[in-house]
Length: 215
Image 1: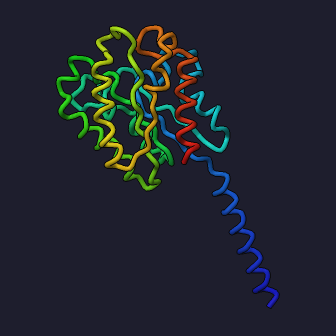
Image 2: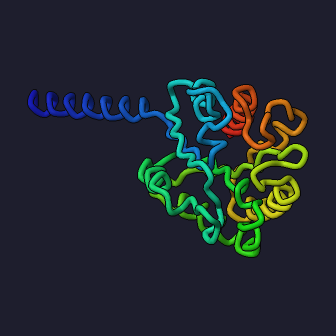
């Protein structure tokens, strides 16, 4: 009887340990994107994923998987899904995924494949939704492009992308983070008319944190 009681106590102790460990496991957030996500334009250590980590706190682990110059389009000049960072993001088995791609797709050489944009975006989203971790995926409206833009990147095509994202977000039951609205009236935070500076990245982090907190 004493042996059985001892065994039961040991099992209860182990169960408590496992439960405690699971409770302490941070919520993993994968930030997918191009140079804006990577942090170009912001001070070192102040990219929007860095600032999002600070806002969310130690209960979260934010991974920056941004790669400069990458496109959402598979026929674009630098497709994101061909990058090692994409594979690393999948292997992270995130609980939350934030995707912000499309800015480089507005360049003329990439936008000629615009008919494939929604299909390629759908495939990217599903590649995360089908992970064992079953993450909640947030799709970002791209940052605004003030004036005439730069590097071939332009606001005209950004607005076309935003229009096409709405039905896709609804179809796949994704969350939406409006990075466009977050910086629309803050052109000074986009000094090269594409990349947010440190303050701009901070506004993006606030928008992402608000969306995550609302869920």
